[in-house]
Amino acid sequence: MFIQTETTPNPSTLKFLPGRPVMASGTLDIRGAEGARQSPLAEALFALDGVSGVFFGSDFISVTNAGADWQELKPTVLGAIMEHFMSGAPLLNEDAVAAAPDADGVEFFAESDAETVAAIKQLIESHVRPAVAGDGGDIKFRGFRDGTVFLALKGSCSGCPSSTATLKRGIQNLLQHYVPDVRAVEQI
Image 1 (cartoon, one colour):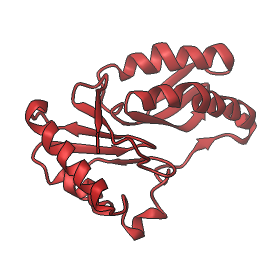
Image 2 (cartoon, rainbow, N blue to C red):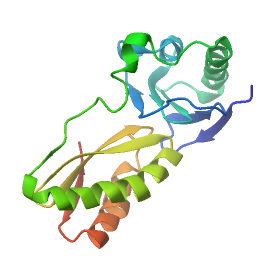
Image 3 (cartoon, rainbow, N blue to C red):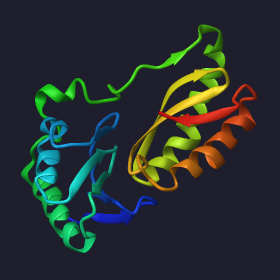
Image 4 (cartoon, rainbow, N blue to C red):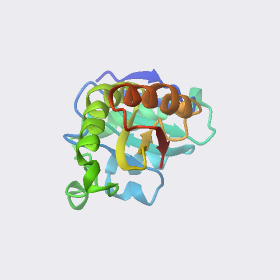
């Protein structure tokens, strides 16, 4: 098994591509050892000294380190990922499967804004999410109020030094261009 790695805009996070599907649907962002109990792979990764976050995407795993040296941590992360996939164990424990895909937030917006929200969501799905996934993360629509779009950043995008620039210069400009009701974009 060959696992590719890619850097992300977040220097604390590396993206690991095992060459096979990771999540069948949705994504899963795990930010601590307590949350790792839902996945044998996440438990193995959090058992490594220095791992502070694990994000499962459709075909990648982003791992965030808590200040450890990637030169030392990367081989052990690769070993844990390889061992997991070679074992044939499921990614998620049986009780976690039903809750995993996108069970992480409630959307809010006025019923009168439903058409605007539909346009915003379509743009995020078609233009923004693929680019963010390419950087080892995910983005979710969370709400729309008084011209402001509220988004949640996950994976390598959460805490990334360039996330503010991505939100303000990239996503905000895109949404304002296509949806005149959008005045601002904020991270939740």
